[in-house]
Length: 437
Ligand code: ADP
Ligand code: MG
Image (cartoon, helix red, strand yellow):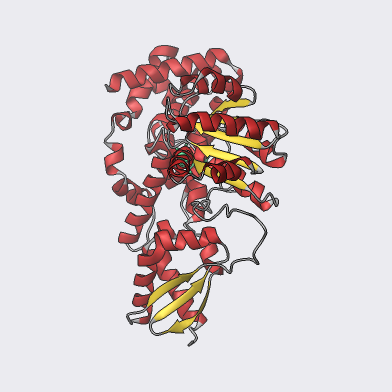
């Protein structure tokens, strides 16, 4: 097999990163091609998750990059990692499972007020499986990080040496069960599911009502629970909000810990955007980070989509990055109703509520009766509009961006201690949004 020079390989990686930033991952840098033969570049992965990622998502993009750089019709072949010496496990637990997503680790998860509890619970469970919270049940609406957390626990348990950590969606469990019945292989099915060190099942709301698989799940659960094996579950509702769950299962879920994951606040969304950008080796200015985080309020998956759009648009414009690029990329997001909130709407609501005048807010006075409503305006402008710190500062008498940042943080932390202020803010926010409809 011919060799491929390190420089050419490096150029291919750079080309992939610039043309397809959404596919780029830091670990791609550690890939080493085995060589080039008959127009095929062979690349072996370090582990099966990497291999899965490459074959599922990167084939076309890598082929294109390789052809661009070499000017020849070469393609890439991803070679799976070497299989370890055969072990004595009677059933392979990885054979028909989707490998864990390499991005879904604790290191890549941003903890904030909205998810501190579920995050801490998952870390605790990964630290001492079967002992702290069993079962652990995490619920919340779509796109808030349940799958990420469940897979992070699974990654962690596997890396600690637990051999049989079974992560799967509830659908897969049901499909396996139906298949086992059809093939008369219930015995193997039970062996497989009841001899695990930890069972992690995602999207339990798909457990069908009035179905034998539910009965089977119930017994699987009991067996593992009694053997003090860790069970982690996720659902889109709390256990008693899932119609197909029967009473005896609900009460069992409540033996452990049931925690909710909430939509992320602005600061957390910003941290997530930074994290996701760094995963893609992209460097974003802070005003762009804020812009993206402010444009997508409720759902972290969409937040990621918005980031991808911004990165792609930046590529179209030769790699330059700034607020203008972000605005171009997310034009349609900003057309949504929440986006039309204007700083004047905020000022109007705040001045009415606090009985002050706009001129006061824009002026120099700093006594508390003026400073507080001014800070509240800045806080709300940050939460409800996609204006940059500079733009907000500019509106309030040409104040510096650090002043705005300080104001927003002060109010954010004050409201945690001050119920009165918190109510006022919620009230104001409702009033402002009501005007938008
Ligand atoms: P769910 O399973 O609740 O529908 P996912 O776990 O699939 O949501 O999350 C959707 C996307 O958002 C994933 O790419 C995930 O990595 C990301 N995400 C969600 N919450 C966070 C967080 N706190 N930190 C980093 N990424 C997050
Ligand atoms: Mg999920």
